[in-house]
Length: 143
Image (cartoon, rainbow, N blue to C red):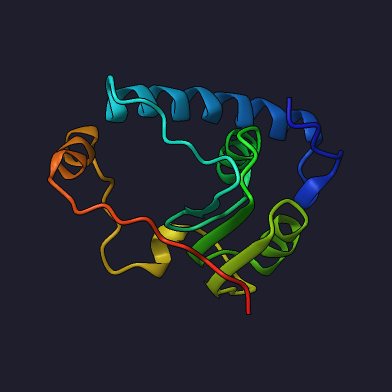
């Protein structure tokens, strides 16, 4: 599976692997539900920014990281508005860059950091993805 070391964030590696496997199945379900018959985007050798609305233990984002890494992006960046400092530090070992706006020491739940934290439904996501967009190729250069 993810071969997460024992004790990552004080959580046994077996527990993290079990949660990550469950989340991976959910990611795959959502991928099918949202993408439909469209082909999977080609991300090999491209920069990927993986965005999460907040990271607590890191199990969900670890599953997403594993899926993205298997597709060999040039760079993998994780971006989130809020996460505990220890989680951000652990993620830095997994990806090229972690962007986190707030890293409060006392972190109880992601929803506490939002005024409104309702869940987005599958139908809302499908509706947003169905909207016409102008797609542009972006080229990123390092300075």
